[in-house]
Amino acid sequence: MASGDWIEQFSGLARLPDPVRTKLVDRSRVINVSAGTHIFGPGNIPDNLLLLLDGTVRVSQTSEKGREIVLYRVEAGQSCVLTTACLLAHEAYAAEGVAETDIKAVSIPRAVFDELLTVSSQFRDFVFAAYARRITDLFRVIDDVAFGKIDVRLAERLIDLAGESNDLKVTHQQLATELGTAREVISRQLADFQKRGLVQQSRGHIVLSDQPALERLVDAV
Amino acid sequence: MASGDWIEQFSGLARLPDPVRTKLVDRSRVINVSAGTHIFGPGNIPDNLLLLLDGTVRVSQTSEKGREIVLYRVEAGQSCVLTTACLLAHEAYAAEGVAETDIKAVSIPRAVFDELLTVSSQFRDFVFAAYARRITDLFRVIDDVAFGKIDVRLAERLIDLAGESNDLKVTHQQLATELGTAREVISRQLADFQKRGLVQQSRGHIVLSDQPALERLVDAV
DNA sequence: CTCTGAATGTAACAAGGTCACCGACGCGGG
DNA sequence: CCCGCGTCGGTGACCTTGTTACATTCAGAG
Image (cartoon, rainbow over all chains, first blue to last red; front, side):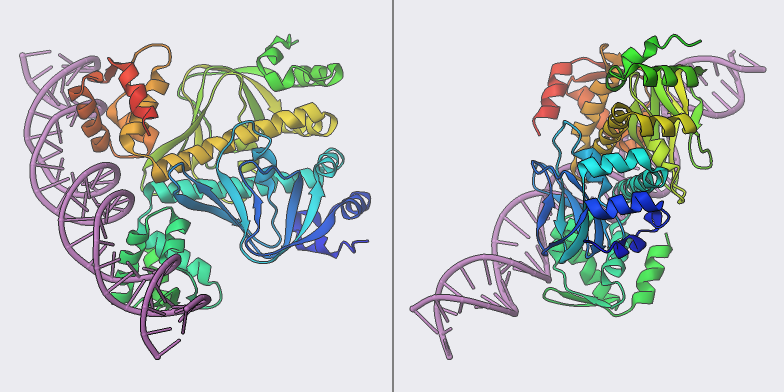
């Protein structure tokens, strides 16, 4: 069966007592999902908890008028807990998760999830810590949207998305979706950044030519 | 000891098996908190889960620059679950809960909370349902702040705050805090509402003189 | 009655979002 | 190779919201 080595990737699970660990490994399975797959969303209730081994899931919300905003990303070593609680809610709402890359994940059936909660305080801690993390993400989004300036938010997101590298392949529209704003706003802001020598643009492609300056812009708040 | 009648107020707990119910009642206690008390917040980690019997708790977030926005309210019959997970998080952030009225609540110590989670699937469901509810609240806030227009948001909030009655005692500043905007914006908007005959104002006091019209405004989105 | 702090009014401006439209680019079919 | 079409990005006018900086009004304390 599954080797269970993956457990090491989850700091909260590493110290699970052996019997619990065995149960978790035996009764979950590793799945692969290809990039672009709609993992959960309105009208699509997953009855598995996913632990991401590889890849990222982008969780976003779409308003009635079709406007979209990215809420957070689930990265390797993290879990999709919010979906658990959310989809337990009667109300319908518009959060959805999309595989941003090809994904490898551990799928824990609802029944196993429930059982682990009863038998392991470590597992409970893991779950609640995961919740805490997502909730603080949401708090951050609210703070940013309500009170943040877009130049800062954009700079931040550019740095974030670029990761190690200093260039990235995104359209203005995609960046607008990240921040829940309009494409024109991003275009204007990027034009300004370019004029200031912070970035270089070409169609569908942005180079962070002065990342330190972008970071200063972010911190200067 | 405590009579335990209060359990009937919580739909999710009504069907607890008798032994669990007894444990919950015996090991929690009813407390009273007076209006205005700061119940939890940065640097103030409660180790009790509160179930509200009476009154409301306003949960809000304050940005670095002192701007504030109301995230949601905990009403009688609901619980403060988010604080559980949140304050378990290492990171500090600025959500805080304030008693908006005098409050009566059941206080469940952390250890009991934990134990109930292990022994009762009904209690687990209760907790996760409570989480789900709050998370959808947060989603709503994000949607409103990112994409909503303030006239609609204000109308909505006025109706909400008025409740049964059709008048309410709030300042423009308080309303601004509700929506995470500036006082001037509220003043402008209320002046407009007044000109349109939707409300009447006097210092610290607003009368919804045409509530149906306000409701139409909200729905017309 | 006066002083004072809170509440509200207002005007001018900045920032961000919306609308309408354009041109530029890239790709696949003819 | 050229054409057509769909995506991407640029731009200006305009509207809404947020900011700044005051002035004014009011209610209660003293």
